[in-house]
Figure 1 (spheres, rainbow, N blue to C red):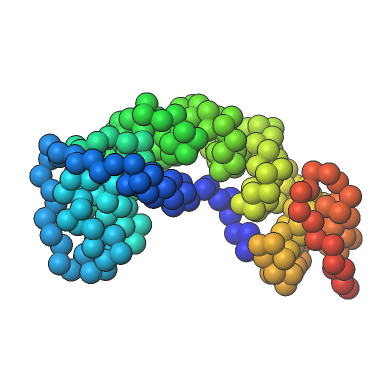
Figure 2: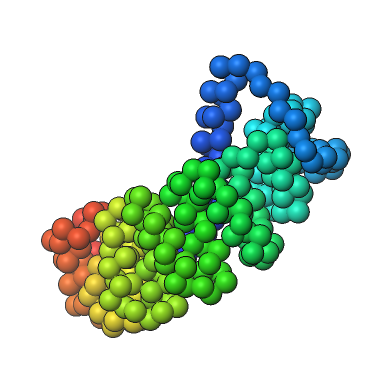
Amino acid sequence: MIKGIIKVILVIFIVFSFNACEDKSSQESKSQEIVYIATLPMPEWDEVGGKKIWDAYKNWHDAKHDPIPATQIGYAYANKLQDYEKALQWFEYSNSMKPTADNSAYACYVLQEMKQYDKAIKWCNDSIIQESNKEALFMLGTVYEDTQKYDKAIEYYKLSANKGYVNAMNNLGFVYNEKLKDYNLAEQWYLKAVKKRNYTAFNNIALFYHEDLHDDIKASAYAIALIGNKYSYQSVMNLLKKDWQIPNDIIQKGYELQLSSDEFPIKYKENLNLE
């Protein structure tokens, strides 16, 4: 349940972008077979790790002259095994055959996980140069946020948000709320994400209203709207009554607010059965 303000992390991006990588692979295979020559040595055969990611690793021989299976092997190391060093080896190897926006973004991700932020920024910038997509801009924002360069984080989050990326909207709310204590801008960005039906933003704005603005009617409203969408009825009621100790009459007003206001794209319409 709602325990703290949540910043959206990179795994969401990397899963989304990987689907695009697979689509590009199928398109290329339909057109013509292209053989690429790597300028870096191919990572050595990994008997142990390869078995754990066999769906990707079975294409090891194809990866000798094709950057896409090389990138997919790196992705598997990062996403399934959290072996970021081996993942980086494969991303660098793939890049030596053909630089792509997806591969650069993955390298940025693993370098961020390894806390090698200067290198991560370079790879993120490479991804943006190759293809100025909203996910790559978002990722670069997270790198700058992790290094406490909030002005730069906001710059890239806004570029991503202006392209419609809802996770960037939520993270802008997070930075303004938790890092800069600019509650006016935090509220604005959380609400933008809420309008896009982002459940994390609902979570965050409920806690924001309770802890920072001390508006328990709105806090209750946004928490109640999540019943049946992300949380159970009982978990939300426990939060409001026991954890936040909000009186029943305030909870009822929150319930009525989320039903009547157009600010709530999702609503809980069942009876609350408040005692």
